[in-house]
Image 1: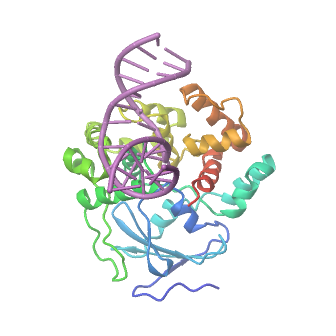
Image 2: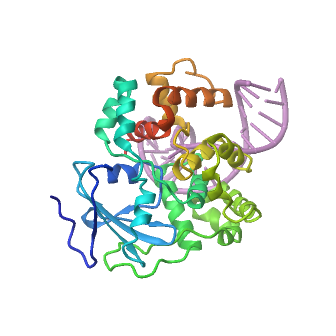
Image 3: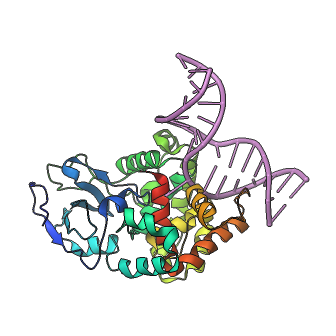
Amino acid sequence: MSHPPEISFRWNLLETTHSPINLASTLRSGQSFRWRKGELDIWWGTIESTGVVLWQESGSAKNPLYWQTFPEQDNKSIIIDYLALDIDLDRMTNEWLAAAPDVLGECLRINHGLRILRQPPQECFFAFQCASCNTVVKIERSVAQLAQRYGCEIPGLPKESPVPLYAFPTLEALANADDAVLRSQLWGYRAPRVIALAKELLDRPEGWLESLRSKSYDEAHTLLSSLHGIGPKIADCICLFSLDKHAAVPVDTHVRQVAERLFLFETTGKSLTPTVYQAIRSAYISRFGEYAGWAQQYFFFVELGR
DNA sequence: GCTTAACCTGGACGC
DNA sequence: GCGTCCAGGTTAAGC
């Protein structure tokens, strides 16, 4: 039985026997950019306007998860929802292994318990605007600066918090952001795009992004792609990481390299045109089914080498 | 339908 | 120290 670090607040315990999770792999796999590991291997982050603290002993995805929320304490539902602990990971991985044991086996063994997060759509939407021609480390910095500059500080954090935590900025705050300031905070040429997209979302009915959860993958992807600045890859990131579209496969350089190394050879050497993008996505779905997006994240994380 | 260039910036790398 | 390349992409123009 593992014991969490002794600290000034009370931990809550979540059993993970039936919903395994590898916390470190999940938070470092490049799907969310707002988590920071502090002293004693404690993870600090935010979910909307809630500060969240997480800890899990490494070694097994079935080690219990310890957690607390701030300023409202004991908000269990937000933890379960964000970490998608309602999804039956064991069933899905058994199906992958039955279908393609040689291809994914090693990735699964190394990162057993890696989960796709169910992030707040708005945060996911804007964070991935920063992804083009960028590195994960720089995306993390850019998003942190965006939240610090335009978000509200979360009150009531324990004294052990390594840094202040900020809620993700509202649409109004982003729409009124200063182009020059954003450019200087590592957003570069992406700055005007962020401001324009915030204005565009403000013009739509409130909750428009969240409403895409109830639409089909094709419909959600098409609607997102219709926005200026959202291409197929970013649309797939938003679909997979925040809209419950588990078969969405964001095809980037890493995901493509894996596919062409292991099971898709006819697209090698070609430019990433819409036709090739679709071929790679289809190759993942034909092997890994309705949770292909979860499978690709195992490949992506290993390829990322974090 | 495909190719190409432009768009910011900082870290890695070779010299 | 300096130049070059590259990094989770998108868009528009030209072919």
